[in-house]
Amino acid sequence: MQNIAIIIILLAVVTALAEITDKIKIPYPILLVLAGIGIGLFPGLPHITLDPDVVFLIFLPPILYAAAWTTSWADFKAAKRPITLLATGCVIFTTCAVAWIAHLFIPDLGWPEAFVLGAIISPPDAIAATSATKGLGVPKRVITVLEGESLVNDATGLIAYKYAVAAVVTGAFSLWHAGLQFFLVAGGGIAFGLALGWVFQWIHKITPDNPTTDTTLTFLSPFIAYLVAESMHLSGVLAVVACGLFLSRKSSEIFSKQTRLQATGSWNTVIFILNGIVFILIGLQLPVILQNIGENSFVKLLGYGAIVSGAVIVGRIIWVYPGAYIPRLSRTIREREPETNLRLVTVVAWSGMRGVVSLAAALALPLTIEGSTPFPNRDLIIFLTFCVIFSTLVLQGLTLRPLIQWLGIKADDGEHRLEQNARLQIASSVIEHIEENYSLALSDEVLNQIKTKYEIRIQRIRKDQSRKMDEQQINEFHRIQQELLDKERQLILTLRNTEKISDEVLRKIEYELDLEETRLMLERGIQ
Image 1 (tube, rainbow, N blue to C red):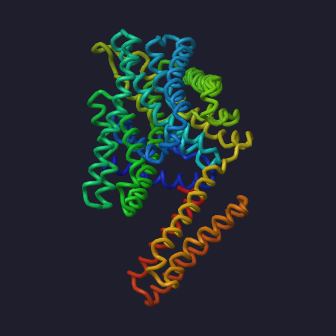
Image 2: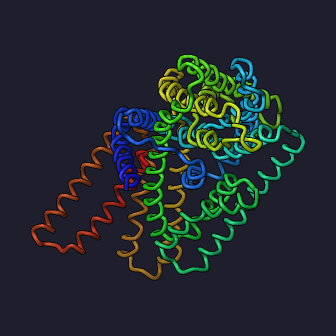
Image 3: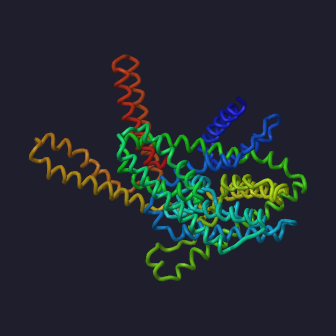
């Protein structure tokens, strides 16, 4: 009963804080972590322990799957080189850099434990990267690189973590064996995820269209992919990502419009709840962590945390700039990829926030090795992991918006132009189709009525292209549209309340207004 009450309280806190972050323009993971710390330090409340197995199973698969589902495969493929350099090269480099710094500056921290720490805090977090850049006007390619990196880097970090822990437990490590296993585990996870995606696609195609069961199956997919891949000793993370990317690419072919609308709404709600709870749980771990560390003074521990956090931040910066420019010495890369922009590279270098995967990996460390011997420096590793999560979220998360404004970075309109051109081409092609196939079968009045919708759409698109509105005009335009939709809602409620229309008519018109408002929200970039 107590656990249920705690979950309900956490959901209430998450919802309230989300409302606040929308107004003060702070990435909500930061506020949630701070709230979690505040709640955890409140006297009289029970301490909540975070089971790593629960985190890996309950939180990681759906969050990664949702991120993969909203990632454009074409954009991901176009940016595969920088994504790979960050998701593998930067993670491995950060692991080694942190291990060296930690071993150098922290007394009694052996090389094996230092590498465990480095592997734990090397991969940036998927949720933090997406939420921190949301609404900042960052160009599409930067967002693609950051989201693509966060999808893949967890696999690299967790595989490195596995072998670092094994080195501590067994006292032995083979670089050749670990490297071979890395490619087998990663490649096998990707192959399995694609195969499972094909199976789910086949199931969706052969079964009758049912939005409820289809949506339910989308929720089961990431858990099945993760559990089965892990049981086969493959990368469950990459299996989930590969399955999500494959099914997202095929979603227009296998899902009906009702399923897409229902699944989108359901997933948005679930991911919001999971993201909110997981970051509050991170904050709630601090009192538990502090209880287990009594060997060093708190000031000294904070000093160690600052050193390791600095190594994580600086290590990423050291990797990102050469990684962005050195490969461009190749003529093939220069011709194939867009020109590198120093300001955008700076944003990528500063967007390395850590999150739940790092904390879960730290808490998953075994308690003992070789029977009854305690795992060396386990509590210290957990504390340092929390310091890195907190410092990167707060320091980098809060300064990212001012940094982007200071650099003068603005969103490119390339994606908008492609969208407008696609809409124009579709409307023009439909009019041609109408004239070729229906001009003789329909009367002029009916034909003109059918064509009017698309002709108006073409006029509006061409007007937008010829006279582009500035941001203030666009906001004003959307505000008026929203006010008119609100007015329509008031009118239909008045008609229903005065019994001039039935509830059935109300729901039908209201559904149309809901769809129109959803379209307006998408235009404004609200998700």
